[in-house]
Image (tube, rainbow, N blue to C red; front, side):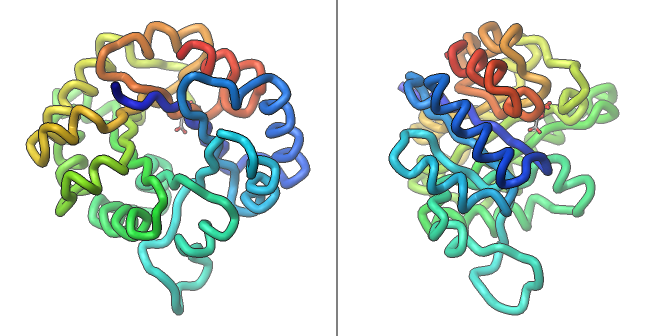
Length: 249
Ligand code: PEP
């Protein structure tokens, strides 16, 4: 049985006070009682407060990025060790907004993921094609190369501690969702690509879908055989919507 995971990516939303409210709302609404894993990823500035509130709960805490370096002269970077001291358990890497606005490459994601794993953090590695790439029939070429690049040099042991998120760029924050069949096709393809590294580990790697997931479409997406959870942006900022998605598990 693969793990099921619902992760909320809050992006650049929520002050410390808003984080406290949202997490208290989620705890009150029973987010910690989910059958699957639940992880919330507030901005860096809210991680300390979030970590204190989630300390005794089963809800994981993720950062939205982290440095590929361990320490040193890297102004504004945040290291794995710093995150660990705040109770962080997961880190999103290679989100399409980081790739688009901060020119992150597969190589950089690969290095950061290895540093995260060495520190004991679970990387959530994001891949996905743009609309142009899909329209030109290049979805598999794009996603395949992202998987090869971000997972280069991974052993079975590292794969077993890694989460992959398929997020078609054209579906993020647009209200357009891939149909369950479209998403499943790419998820199956991703699992086959991972199987080329290690077949047994590939069967265990959770592959999350992200892109305008909401309570009304979560059930159908999550019922696909290779969709093991969701990476949720906008809908993770509203307690009722996020709980609706968690309950769809
Ligand atoms: C995301 O940012 O990872 C995401 C999937 O956003 P949204 O759910 O808002 O499309």
